[in-house]
Length: 393
Image (tube, rainbow, N blue to C red; front, side, top):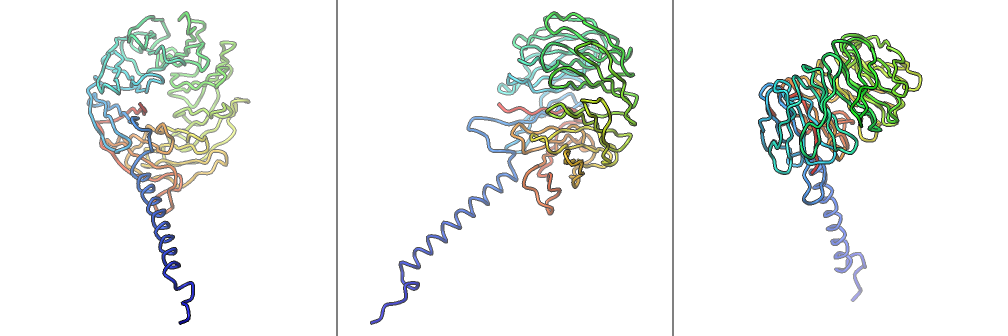
Protein backbone atom coordinates (compact mmCIF):
# COMPACT_ATOMS: atom_id res chain seq x y z
CA UNK A 1 0.00 0.00 0.00
CA UNK A 2 1.48 3.45 -0.91
CA UNK A 3 2.33 5.80 1.97
CA UNK A 4 0.37 8.99 2.49
CA UNK A 5 2.16 12.25 1.59
CA UNK A 6 4.16 13.63 4.54
CA UNK A 7 1.90 16.69 4.80
CA UNK A 8 -1.00 14.46 5.57
CA UNK A 9 0.64 12.31 8.25
CA UNK A 10 -0.60 12.56 11.88
CA UNK A 11 2.83 13.73 13.07
CA UNK A 12 2.84 16.58 10.59
CA UNK A 13 -0.67 17.68 11.61
CA UNK A 14 0.34 17.44 15.31
CA UNK A 15 3.31 19.77 14.80
CA UNK A 16 1.10 22.32 13.05
CA UNK A 17 -1.45 22.15 15.90
CA UNK A 18 1.29 22.81 18.48
CA UNK A 19 2.49 25.84 16.51
CA UNK A 20 -1.06 27.15 16.22
CA UNK A 21 -1.58 26.78 19.98
CA UNK A 22 1.68 28.64 20.69
CA UNK A 23 0.72 31.48 18.36
CA UNK A 24 -2.72 31.75 19.98
CA UNK A 25 -1.16 31.80 23.46
CA UNK A 26 1.22 34.58 22.40
CA UNK A 27 -1.66 36.61 20.96
CA UNK A 28 -3.66 36.06 24.15
CA UNK A 29 -0.74 37.26 26.28
CA UNK A 30 -0.40 40.40 24.16
CA UNK A 31 -4.15 41.03 24.45
CA UNK A 32 -4.07 40.64 28.24
CA UNK A 33 -1.12 43.03 28.46
CA UNK A 34 -2.89 45.57 26.26
CA UNK A 35 -6.03 45.42 28.41
CA UNK A 36 -3.91 45.83 31.52
CA UNK A 37 -2.22 48.87 30.07
CA UNK A 38 -5.60 50.36 29.18
CA UNK A 39 -6.90 50.05 32.72
CA UNK A 40 -3.81 50.26 34.91
CA UNK A 41 -1.36 53.15 35.10
CA UNK A 42 1.74 50.91 35.14
CA UNK A 43 3.07 47.64 36.43
CA UNK A 44 4.56 47.98 39.92
CA UNK A 45 6.91 45.81 41.89
CA UNK A 46 5.19 43.58 44.47
CA UNK A 47 4.36 45.47 47.63
CA UNK A 48 4.59 48.90 45.97
CA UNK A 49 1.69 51.34 45.67
CA UNK A 50 1.06 54.25 43.31
CA UNK A 51 -1.41 56.90 44.46
CA UNK A 52 -2.60 60.34 43.40
CA UNK A 53 -3.76 62.84 46.01
CA UNK A 54 -6.11 65.70 45.16
CA UNK A 55 -6.62 68.67 47.47
CA UNK A 56 -10.22 69.91 47.39
CA UNK A 57 -10.42 73.61 48.21
CA UNK A 58 -14.12 74.03 48.97
CA UNK A 59 -14.64 71.11 51.36
CA UNK A 60 -11.18 71.03 52.98
CA UNK A 61 -10.41 67.43 52.07
CA UNK A 62 -7.76 65.28 50.43
CA UNK A 63 -8.89 62.51 48.05
CA UNK A 64 -6.60 59.45 47.84
CA UNK A 65 -6.75 57.61 44.49
CA UNK A 66 -5.26 54.19 43.75
CA UNK A 67 -3.73 54.58 40.28
CA UNK A 68 -3.54 50.83 39.69
CA UNK A 69 -7.23 50.22 40.42
CA UNK A 70 -8.17 53.70 39.14
CA UNK A 71 -10.48 54.33 42.06
CA UNK A 72 -10.72 56.75 44.98
CA UNK A 73 -10.02 54.90 48.22
CA UNK A 74 -10.36 57.56 50.93
CA UNK A 75 -11.40 61.14 51.66
CA UNK A 76 -9.40 62.80 54.43
CA UNK A 77 -10.16 66.06 56.23
CA UNK A 78 -7.04 68.26 56.20
CA UNK A 79 -8.45 71.71 57.03
CA UNK A 80 -9.97 74.77 55.35
CA UNK A 81 -8.81 75.80 51.85
CA UNK A 82 -6.01 73.29 51.32
CA UNK A 83 -3.45 74.19 48.67
CA UNK A 84 0.24 73.92 47.83
CA UNK A 85 0.13 70.12 47.87
CA UNK A 86 3.49 68.37 47.37
CA UNK A 87 4.83 64.83 47.63
CA UNK A 88 7.82 64.71 49.97
CA UNK A 89 10.89 63.68 47.91
CA UNK A 90 12.22 61.20 50.51
CA UNK A 91 9.49 60.35 53.00
CA UNK A 92 6.17 58.53 52.44
CA UNK A 93 4.29 61.75 53.04
CA UNK A 94 2.12 64.29 51.27
CA UNK A 95 2.48 67.89 52.46
CA UNK A 96 0.14 70.82 51.94
CA UNK A 97 -1.06 73.98 53.60
CA UNK A 98 -4.36 75.17 55.01
CA UNK A 99 -4.43 78.76 53.80
CA UNK A 100 -7.32 79.77 56.05
CA UNK A 101 -6.01 77.77 58.99
CA UNK A 102 -2.45 79.10 58.83
CA UNK A 103 -0.74 75.72 59.10
CA UNK A 104 1.03 72.98 57.17
CA UNK A 105 -0.57 69.53 57.25
CA UNK A 106 1.32 66.27 56.73
CA UNK A 107 -0.39 63.10 55.50
CA UNK A 108 1.41 59.77 56.05
CA UNK A 109 0.65 57.62 52.99
CA UNK A 110 1.49 54.31 54.71
CA UNK A 111 -0.45 55.05 57.89
CA UNK A 112 -3.22 56.67 55.79
CA UNK A 113 -3.79 59.55 58.20
CA UNK A 114 -2.77 63.14 58.92
CA UNK A 115 0.19 62.97 61.32
CA UNK A 116 0.94 66.67 61.83
CA UNK A 117 -0.51 70.17 61.64
CA UNK A 118 2.29 72.74 61.92
CA UNK A 119 1.42 76.44 62.55
CA UNK A 120 3.45 78.67 60.20
CA UNK A 121 1.59 82.01 60.14
CA UNK A 122 -1.38 83.54 58.36
CA UNK A 123 -2.24 82.68 54.76
CA UNK A 124 0.39 80.21 53.54
CA UNK A 125 0.04 79.09 49.92
CA UNK A 126 2.83 76.65 49.03
CA UNK A 127 5.53 74.29 50.32
CA UNK A 128 9.01 73.57 48.99
CA UNK A 129 11.70 71.14 50.16
CA UNK A 130 15.45 71.20 50.46
CA UNK A 131 17.38 68.99 48.06
CA UNK A 132 17.96 66.30 50.70
CA UNK A 133 14.36 66.46 51.93
CA UNK A 134 15.41 67.36 55.47
CA UNK A 135 13.81 70.82 55.51
CA UNK A 136 10.58 72.37 54.24
CA UNK A 137 10.00 76.07 53.56
CA UNK A 138 6.68 77.91 53.69
CA UNK A 139 5.96 81.60 53.12
CA UNK A 140 3.17 83.06 55.27
CA UNK A 141 1.57 85.83 53.22
CA UNK A 142 -0.38 87.34 56.12
CA UNK A 143 2.62 87.35 58.45
CA UNK A 144 5.32 88.69 56.08
CA UNK A 145 7.58 85.80 57.02
CA UNK A 146 8.94 82.44 55.89
CA UNK A 147 9.19 79.37 58.13
CA UNK A 148 11.78 76.59 58.03
CA UNK A 149 10.46 73.18 59.14
CA UNK A 150 12.42 70.10 60.19
CA UNK A 151 10.73 67.33 58.19
CA UNK A 152 11.60 64.54 60.65
CA UNK A 153 10.21 66.23 63.77
CA UNK A 154 7.51 68.28 61.97
CA UNK A 155 8.62 71.35 63.96
CA UNK A 156 9.36 74.95 62.89
CA UNK A 157 13.06 75.53 63.59
CA UNK A 158 13.56 79.02 62.14
CA UNK A 159 11.67 82.07 60.85
CA UNK A 160 12.77 85.00 58.71
CA UNK A 161 11.19 88.31 57.76
CA UNK A 162 10.35 88.93 54.11
CA UNK A 163 8.73 91.66 52.05
CA UNK A 164 5.01 92.35 52.10
CA UNK A 165 2.70 89.41 51.40
CA UNK A 166 5.19 86.73 50.36
CA UNK A 167 3.62 84.35 47.86
CA UNK A 168 5.95 81.35 47.71
CA UNK A 169 9.41 80.27 48.87
CA UNK A 170 11.54 78.20 46.48
CA UNK A 171 14.88 76.48 47.05
CA UNK A 172 17.53 76.71 44.32
CA UNK A 173 18.72 73.37 42.84
CA UNK A 174 22.12 73.72 44.54
CA UNK A 175 20.39 74.16 47.89
CA UNK A 176 22.19 77.45 48.62
CA UNK A 177 19.37 80.00 48.39
CA UNK A 178 15.70 80.44 49.30
CA UNK A 179 13.86 82.66 46.81
CA UNK A 180 10.75 84.41 48.14
CA UNK A 181 8.36 86.43 45.96
CA UNK A 182 6.68 89.38 47.74
CA UNK A 183 3.53 90.51 45.97
CA UNK A 184 2.62 93.85 47.58
CA UNK A 185 6.02 95.55 47.42
CA UNK A 186 6.99 93.79 44.13
CA UNK A 187 10.28 92.44 45.43
CA UNK A 188 12.13 89.15 45.68
CA UNK A 189 13.95 88.22 48.89
CA UNK A 190 17.06 86.05 48.62
CA UNK A 191 17.82 84.12 51.82
CA UNK A 192 20.90 82.08 52.69
CA UNK A 193 19.60 78.52 53.14
CA UNK A 194 22.17 77.72 55.85
CA UNK A 195 21.82 80.82 58.04
CA UNK A 196 18.31 81.93 56.98
CA UNK A 197 19.67 85.47 56.75
CA UNK A 198 18.51 87.84 53.99
CA UNK A 199 21.21 88.33 51.35
CA UNK A 200 19.38 90.75 49.07
CA UNK A 201 16.00 92.32 48.32
CA UNK A 202 15.50 92.88 44.59
CA UNK A 203 12.75 94.96 42.95
CA UNK A 204 11.02 93.12 40.10
CA UNK A 205 7.89 93.40 37.92
CA UNK A 206 4.61 93.99 39.76
CA UNK A 207 3.04 91.29 41.96
CA UNK A 208 5.68 88.57 41.51
CA UNK A 209 4.36 85.03 41.85
CA UNK A 210 5.97 81.94 40.35
CA UNK A 211 9.67 81.04 40.27
CA UNK A 212 11.71 78.93 37.84
CA UNK A 213 15.45 78.44 38.34
CA UNK A 214 18.14 77.20 35.93
CA UNK A 215 19.57 73.76 36.84
CA UNK A 216 22.94 75.37 37.65
CA UNK A 217 21.24 77.88 40.00
CA UNK A 218 22.68 80.85 38.12
CA UNK A 219 19.43 82.60 37.16
CA UNK A 220 15.84 82.80 38.38
CA UNK A 221 12.75 83.67 36.32
CA UNK A 222 9.90 85.37 38.19
CA UNK A 223 6.41 85.73 36.72
CA UNK A 224 4.33 88.87 37.24
CA UNK A 225 0.78 88.37 38.47
CA UNK A 226 -0.71 91.42 36.74
CA UNK A 227 1.56 92.39 33.86
CA UNK A 228 2.96 90.80 30.70
CA UNK A 229 6.47 90.48 32.13
CA UNK A 230 8.94 88.02 33.54
CA UNK A 231 11.78 89.30 35.71
CA UNK A 232 15.16 87.62 35.26
CA UNK A 233 17.52 87.67 38.25
CA UNK A 234 21.25 86.92 38.23
CA UNK A 235 21.53 84.85 41.40
CA UNK A 236 25.33 84.98 41.50
CA UNK A 237 25.32 88.77 41.48
CA UNK A 238 22.02 89.10 43.41
CA UNK A 239 20.67 91.64 40.93
CA UNK A 240 17.92 92.12 38.37
CA UNK A 241 19.03 91.48 34.79
CA UNK A 242 15.89 92.53 32.91
CA UNK A 243 12.10 92.72 33.06
CA UNK A 244 11.31 90.82 29.89
CA UNK A 245 8.20 91.84 27.93
CA UNK A 246 6.07 88.87 26.84
CA UNK A 247 3.04 90.34 25.10
CA UNK A 248 0.65 88.59 27.49
CA UNK A 249 0.38 87.64 31.16
CA UNK A 250 2.33 84.46 32.00
CA UNK A 251 0.80 81.25 33.28
CA UNK A 252 2.90 78.37 34.62
CA UNK A 253 6.68 78.46 34.13
CA UNK A 254 8.13 75.19 32.82
CA UNK A 255 11.91 74.84 32.54
CA UNK A 256 13.43 72.47 29.98
CA UNK A 257 15.47 69.78 31.74
CA UNK A 258 18.76 71.09 30.37
CA UNK A 259 17.80 74.68 31.20
CA UNK A 260 18.09 75.89 27.62
CA UNK A 261 14.48 77.09 27.25
CA UNK A 262 11.64 78.30 29.43
CA UNK A 263 8.06 77.54 28.32
CA UNK A 264 5.33 79.96 29.34
CA UNK A 265 1.65 79.34 28.50
CA UNK A 266 -0.15 82.68 28.25
CA UNK A 267 -3.97 82.93 28.46
CA UNK A 268 -3.90 86.47 27.03
CA UNK A 269 -2.06 85.46 23.87
CA UNK A 270 -3.86 82.09 23.54
CA UNK A 271 -0.52 80.41 23.07
CA UNK A 272 2.88 79.30 24.26
CA UNK A 273 5.78 81.72 24.67
CA UNK A 274 9.32 80.32 24.42
CA UNK A 275 12.24 82.07 26.13
CA UNK A 276 15.88 81.33 25.31
CA UNK A 277 17.58 81.25 28.71
CA UNK A 278 21.03 81.89 27.23
CA UNK A 279 20.06 85.18 25.57
CA UNK A 280 17.10 86.09 27.85
CA UNK A 281 14.96 86.76 24.77
CA UNK A 282 11.55 85.59 23.59
CA UNK A 283 12.50 83.44 20.61
CA UNK A 284 9.29 81.68 19.61
CA UNK A 285 5.52 81.64 19.95
CA UNK A 286 3.04 78.81 19.26
CA UNK A 287 -0.72 79.35 19.00
CA UNK A 288 -2.55 76.80 21.15
CA UNK A 289 -6.21 77.63 21.76
CA UNK A 290 -8.50 79.46 24.14
CA UNK A 291 -6.77 80.04 27.49
CA UNK A 292 -3.66 77.89 28.04
CA UNK A 293 -2.68 77.84 31.68
CA UNK A 294 -0.79 74.97 33.35
CA UNK A 295 1.78 72.76 31.59
CA UNK A 296 4.05 69.78 32.18
CA UNK A 297 6.80 68.14 30.13
CA UNK A 298 6.68 64.43 29.36
CA UNK A 299 9.38 62.43 31.17
CA UNK A 300 11.44 62.18 27.96
CA UNK A 301 11.19 65.95 27.43
CA UNK A 302 9.69 65.57 23.95
CA UNK A 303 6.10 66.74 24.47
CA UNK A 304 4.75 69.64 26.50
CA UNK A 305 1.18 69.03 27.66
CA UNK A 306 -0.73 72.30 28.20
CA UNK A 307 -4.10 72.55 29.93
CA UNK A 308 -6.69 74.78 28.26
CA UNK A 309 -9.60 75.21 30.71
CA UNK A 310 -11.45 77.50 28.31
CA UNK A 311 -11.62 74.78 25.65
CA UNK A 312 -11.94 71.77 28.03
CA UNK A 313 -8.90 70.08 26.55
CA UNK A 314 -5.20 69.40 26.88
CA UNK A 315 -2.97 70.47 24.02
CA UNK A 316 0.18 68.41 23.35
CA UNK A 317 3.08 70.28 21.73
CA UNK A 318 6.02 68.43 20.17
CA UNK A 319 8.43 70.90 21.64
CA UNK A 320 11.46 70.35 19.42
CA UNK A 321 9.48 70.96 16.22
CA UNK A 322 7.05 73.47 17.80
CA UNK A 323 4.29 71.28 16.37
CA UNK A 324 0.84 71.27 17.97
CA UNK A 325 -0.58 67.75 18.05
CA UNK A 326 -4.23 66.75 18.18
CA UNK A 327 -5.79 68.03 21.46
CA UNK A 328 -7.04 65.58 24.06
CA UNK A 329 -10.69 66.30 24.85
CA UNK A 330 -11.57 65.76 28.52
CA UNK A 331 -14.00 67.31 31.01
CA UNK A 332 -14.56 70.99 31.82
CA UNK A 333 -11.80 73.27 33.09
CA UNK A 334 -8.71 71.04 33.26
CA UNK A 335 -6.07 72.93 35.21
CA UNK A 336 -3.40 71.17 37.25
CA UNK A 337 -1.32 68.57 35.38
CA UNK A 338 1.15 65.97 36.63
CA UNK A 339 2.70 62.74 35.41
CA UNK A 340 2.53 59.55 37.43
CA UNK A 341 5.95 58.45 38.63
CA UNK A 342 6.35 55.68 36.04
CA UNK A 343 5.81 58.17 33.26
CA UNK A 344 3.10 56.75 30.98
CA UNK A 345 0.08 58.28 32.71
CA UNK A 346 -0.85 61.96 32.73
CA UNK A 347 -3.26 63.23 35.39
CA UNK A 348 -5.39 66.35 35.08
CA UNK A 349 -7.51 67.97 37.79
CA UNK A 350 -10.83 69.17 36.41
CA UNK A 351 -12.12 71.97 38.60
CA UNK A 352 -15.29 72.31 36.53
CA UNK A 353 -16.52 68.75 37.10
CA UNK A 354 -14.79 67.81 40.38
CA UNK A 355 -12.97 64.91 38.74
CA UNK A 356 -9.47 63.62 38.08
CA UNK A 357 -8.84 62.73 34.45
CA UNK A 358 -6.48 59.80 33.82
CA UNK A 359 -4.82 59.98 30.42
CA UNK A 360 -2.69 57.32 28.76
CA UNK A 361 0.18 58.93 26.80
CA UNK A 362 1.58 55.91 24.99
CA UNK A 363 0.10 53.55 22.44
CA UNK A 364 -2.93 55.69 21.59
CA UNK A 365 -4.42 55.52 18.12
CA UNK A 366 -6.25 58.14 16.13
CA UNK A 367 -9.47 56.25 16.79
CA UNK A 368 -9.04 56.39 20.58
CA UNK A 369 -8.16 60.08 20.72
CA UNK A 370 -4.95 61.97 20.09
CA UNK A 371 -1.85 59.85 19.32
CA UNK A 372 -0.19 61.83 22.13
CA UNK A 373 -2.81 60.85 24.70
CA UNK A 374 -6.20 59.23 25.24
CA UNK A 375 -8.59 59.58 28.17
CA UNK A 376 -9.04 56.25 29.98
CA UNK A 377 -10.95 57.25 33.11
CA UNK A 378 -12.61 60.04 35.08
CA UNK A 379 -12.54 59.66 38.86
CA UNK A 380 -14.80 61.76 41.12
CA UNK A 381 -12.98 63.73 43.84
CA UNK A 382 -14.01 66.42 46.33
CA UNK A 383 -15.52 69.86 45.86
CA UNK A 384 -13.47 72.39 43.83
CA UNK A 385 -10.22 70.42 43.40
CA UNK A 386 -7.17 72.66 43.04
CA UNK A 387 -4.05 70.67 43.92
CA UNK A 388 -2.45 67.38 42.87
CA UNK A 389 0.46 65.22 43.99
CA UNK A 390 1.58 61.69 43.05
CA UNK A 391 3.43 59.31 45.35
CA UNK A 392 4.82 55.79 44.93
CA UNK A 393 5.46 54.03 48.22
